[in-house]
Amino acid sequence: MLEYDLVIIGAGPGGLTAGLYGARAELKTVCLEKLSPGGQIANTDRIDDYPGFTSISGPELASKMLDHAQSYGLELKMEEVKEVKLDGKYKIIKTDREGYKSKTLIVGTGGRPRLLNVPGEKELYGKGVSYCAICDGAFFKGEIIAVVGGGDAAVEEGIYLTKFGKKVYIIHRRDQLRAAKSIQEHAFRNEKIEFIWDSIVTKVNGTNQVESLSLLNKKTGEESTLDVGAVFPFIGFIPNSGMVKDLVETDESGYIITDYKMETKVRGIYAIGDVRKQLCKQITNAVGDGTTAAVAADRYIDEEFD
Image (cartoon, rainbow, N blue to C red; front, side, top):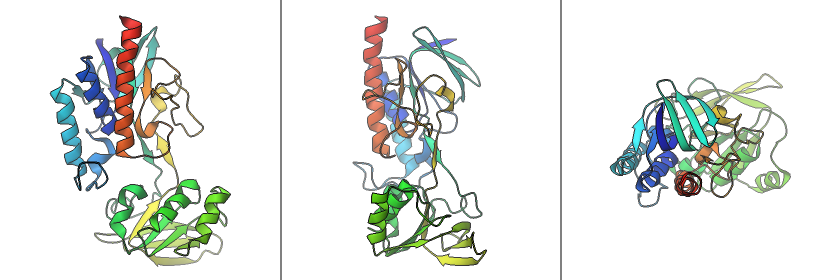
């Protein structure tokens, strides 16, 4: 079994930042990633909201982050974590290839948006299909935009998108919203927002860009087509917390609960980025979380192991 001071699960922006700070603190640090370095940003064509870069591609930013962290000694291993256990103060991490014994653990496994699972959605991802209004809303200035969902996130993001779209449709499968009343009232007062009730999206249409949505009214059975330039599904987000859910505390949705140090209820285990319960899901959030968790891990090791 390989021994480390710090094991990081997930090589997204938060994990790579934690790796940078851990390695700079001269902790023996390894980052475990099952897919590719960068996490979700590795699949993002263009990023306009990361400080210092007016515009940069996701893969380029991920590469720069990885190179920076590795220049200080971060190890990156492409392995999928299967199990996390405790052995006294130590954390035991088992992957599909190896076993690791670590003084500290940072969980930066992110999450995934709940998909509509309709034709055209995956094919047009990044071409008008987006799951982040803050990230991509500005790309659709003057467009007609659709939002799918009826909860707090859907309605709040719909309101936000009115800053850019000339019209925003909010499509909901029921005849009333689940969002908080205060959020609903704000949306109902917005002249740019129009609601489409009792309806679901059955197809996202377009060749190289979203052009329209095929809709089905669940009550009447009527089918229709809605011309839009972009669609933002907000029907839920699934945090990838399963590997530690029996160790740490999570909320009803599976988000890991942490304190101001990013520490979970288990000392020496930290959570960062989208897997953690927090207000918004941005690269800058993850980077800040990674910094805090790595500094906290270094201090914990000084206190408990020296």
